[in-house]
Image (cartoon, rainbow, N blue to C red; front, top):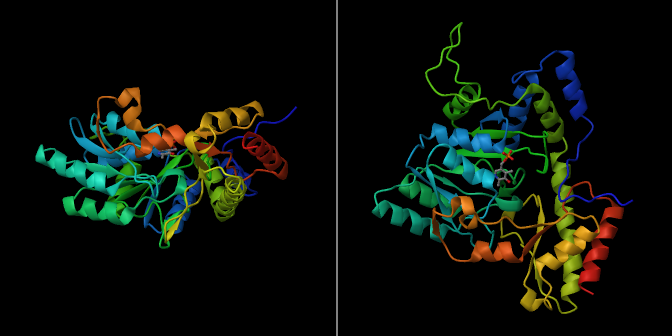
Length: 380
Ligand SMILES: *Cc1c(COP(=O)(O)O)cnc(C)c1O
C-alpha cells in the first residue's frame, strides 16, 4: 500500500521534544513560560526585528494588528487579493471592509500601481484606508520598496503578512521586518510549525507589549480581574512554543531543502520544455530571496497540447500525491463578492493555470521517483 505524499507536511527535528519535556517537567503548561520567552527571542533575533509576541495563530496576529491600529466599523483596509483567507478574514472581524488589489507578474504579490490607484481613488471619496496588508505568497517577497514608499506618501500603516515567508528576504533584509507590524504563521503546513501558532513582530515596543496584553484578555494590573478593553485569548502556550524553539534550530536546513525542491522541479520541467512544452515557474527578481515554501508551476493549456493544471493535479491524485491549485483570489470568493477590487486579471489567471507541487522538506528519494513518474507520464 502506497503512502500519501503531502503538499507540505510537518518536519520535526531532534530538539522539539526536549523543550516540550522541559515544559512538562517544570510544569510550565500555560500560555506563558520560558519556551514562550525563548521562542519570541529567537524569532526577533532571526527576523531582525526588536520585539516579537508568540500567539495562537497568524490570523490572530493580523486581527490584533488591526485592533491596535484602531481599525473599526466602516473603515477600509487594503488587502492583497491573491492570498489565503486568513489574511482577509480579520478585516471582517473588526467590522471593516477589505479593498482588494491584484498582483503583478514578477512576484505574484500586491501590484504597487493598482495600490496607488486604489488609495488615490478612495481618498477622493474621503475614505483613506486605515492599513495596507501585502503578502509574500509561497515565500516570494512582495515589492516592498514601492509598497512602503506609497504607504509613507499617504501615511498609511503596513501590516506585512509573512506567514509563508519566514526566512525569505530582500537585499538581505528578512521578510516580516518591513511593515509597521509583521506577522508569521506556524500552522502545520508552513515551513516550520508548532502544530498551530503565529507571531506578531515589530520594532515598536508599544505594539508588541499591547499585543501580549490584548492576547491575554486585556487584564489590567490589579489583584482581581479588571478590564477596560475587550481582550482576546490569543496567546501561544508554553508547550507549543517548545516545538517552535526546536523548529528554529532546523529552519535554515528546511529553507535549503525547499529551495532544492524548486531547483529539482525546474530541472525536470526545463527538460520537458525542451521537448516542445511551455511550463512556467517564478524566478527570483534581482536581490530577492524566496524560502520556496511551495514550488508552483503555470500551465497554459494553449501552449501545452491541451494539458491544464487539473489534468496534472488529477494524475498526481490517482497516485496518492497531493498537489493544489494556487490560491483563489479573495475578490472571486463568494464571501467577499461585494467588496471593491482594483486590478486586472493577473491573479485570476494564476489561479486558473497554476498548481502547487509537493514541496515538503522531508520528501524521500522514493517520493521523488513517484512524483517524477507522474510528471513524465502526463508530458509524455
Ligand atoms: C497560513 C496563512 C495565514 C494564517 O495563519 P494561521 O496561523 O493559519 O492562522 C495568513 N496568511 C497567509 C498568507 C497564510 O498562508
